[in-house]
Image 1 (tube, one colour):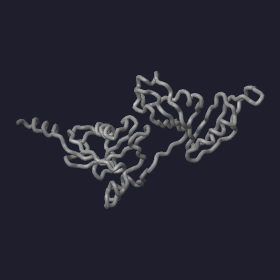
Image 2 (cartoon, rainbow, N blue to C red):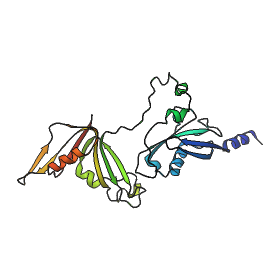
Image 3 (cartoon, helix red, strand yellow):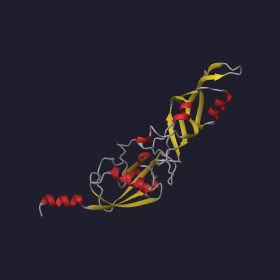
Image 4 (tube, rainbow, N blue to C red):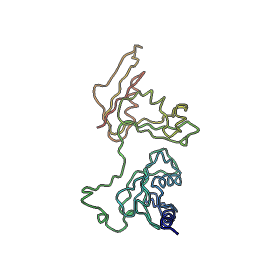
Amino acid sequence: MRKHEIFDNIRESKIKIKVRIPDMNREFNFKLFRRTRVKEICIRICELLDIDPLRTDAFLYPPFGLLEMNHSSTLMQNGIEDGMTIVAKIHYTGYRSKVNTLYKIVSKKSQFGNSSMENFIDKEKFPIYNLKTKVELYGVKVVGVCTNTRCIAFNKEVTFPLGPGTFNINEILANTRCQTCPYKDRNHQKPIKVKNVSLINCLWRIQGHYIDANGFRNYKYCKGWLKTDGEDNLKLYDLLQSTNYIDPVLIVKVL
């Protein structure tokens, strides 16, 4: 057998790896080629968890690794050998499904066991090392239900973080569309059924035309900014109910 044929056989041989997801207490065993890309493994994990890969951020870490593996890299490039266990972190941003996970980094105990995590950190490369435990949202958040029967999120609750900016509330209620729907259906589907509009960690005010007590059309705006710490939707609803707005405009900026 020629030398290059021997190398081809080595490259084509499959290896067994285990993917562990500490946040969910789940493990998956795969038999893959060394040239398999990390992105392919992430997509397969999402399929096994019954969640949409387009609405999920999945990251893989080598054994005792602090840096995530590049999605376009292969197992061979990351030095993954037969029998190794790699750690997965799932950041699920889509609709509610069978899996309801929170965004959190693998804990010290689940990642490093009884060993000290500092033993695996290059202090010169990571002078300040903090673990982020939650996602911080700012501005407008819309929650609704998709009405497109061809969408995988049909009749499921979908969250839309719109963030800061200027928004026509009538447009939000009437024309917000599901981002998980197939591309070919986005211009033909019905808008989602909006269930809730919340304001999160922001300064905001509302303005627009309204009908006064005498039946005349006038324009009203807030001179100052209202502040919302955390998440709240009651203040916005109360303000909309107090004035009979025709075309209310919501202006939002971060704190």
